Image (tube, rainbow over all chains, first blue to last red; front, top):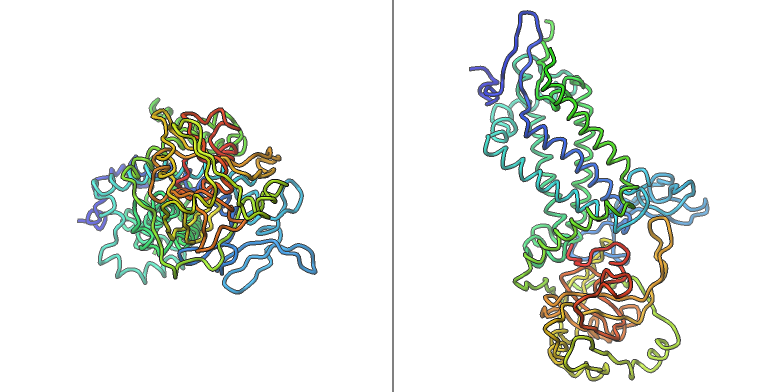
Length: 287
Length: 264
């Protein structure tokens, strides 16, 4: 039994190996591919509309309440200084001058007070009502898409076999970290299954999306009346709102690393595999 | 060999990406497109149906302890309605301010603030959630709206309570243009109107409401966002249809694109 077979991906390998030809196999089944791209679209719109919503009150707090008079641990604002109006981002007690991008940036060619700039928000102009419409439209699609993915993945054991790391995976973490740092990607048989860092990253992003949904719901006064325990789990509406923002930031970090890895591992092969399902196994490194 | 099936699949994938790209690129124009607005309305209706189904049991909003009260309760929207008439009411300490309850009712009522203060009261410490994202916790005292509506004897045809307010909130800029000024108003359905925590409130944190927080009377409708909590209420109109009032969407902010059922 090969390592790949043990990992449970054997059912999906249809090796089409002619002598001398590159070995390819069916890596991503249709439900994975479809939910992946629906998710891409959802996250794009949720991030953009989320930043527009954030602009309506660009301050974050811990606890049950939080408004202008309460201490924020993160804020973006425009302030008059001897050097003119500056965009100031405050993290903890440290101020950063972020003029031009955060706090004070150009809107239709003229500088204006705006937490996140026009080119990052959906819609680009500031409108809380419309940003909320986009946010809820894609929140529903994300939730339905995510629920379908989770149910399918558990039933077909995709999560258990392909994503959940086993004991051997966990032991391999130091080696995998070293390989990633040296930008060496698995080849041959090892490339047919997700490596442990991939598994942890995918597991992490699934948990982050679940956290986004739950903290998003905790911000709803209606949902809070129905599920008051959400407030206890997250420690209050304002803490939930802050976790919502931090989780979104971590998802952005995941996307950046994910895209870098796609480029490093061979963008055409990787993107093709998420479109058609077929993945060409990288050949063994020359000894 | 590329089969016809492969070509169809490639065309579908290409179309998918083109469609997704176009959607992102045209997000602004879609936002302003009335036809696409129907998609948003459909989602809003779907969200409302889900929330109403969840809250059909009349669940209460969480009530907090005195220790949880915000040191400063942020005021928002209108800070002072101003105008000769309202200023006179402030000077007279709202002695002749009256709350009228009319429309589809058997016995229209007109009550002074002093009369309302003598009615059975409810005091609750609740969290006020603004659509902008901030929250403040405060202690509210007032008469349950359901008591007033029962006293007025609402018609079986009545479906909404519409709150007419003394403040005119002016020109909130939006969508790149100025918005029309307008008299503030709000409306809620009967399930929320008769909810035990829905109050016509006159005290905040044990003191009579100040002007910034809606003196002398304001609505508390605890399972919805802040803009539903109309301030400076002078008239409650029972109706079966709010589409003929102002912009027709049931509230000042609703007429400007916000959700009528503001549970999220």
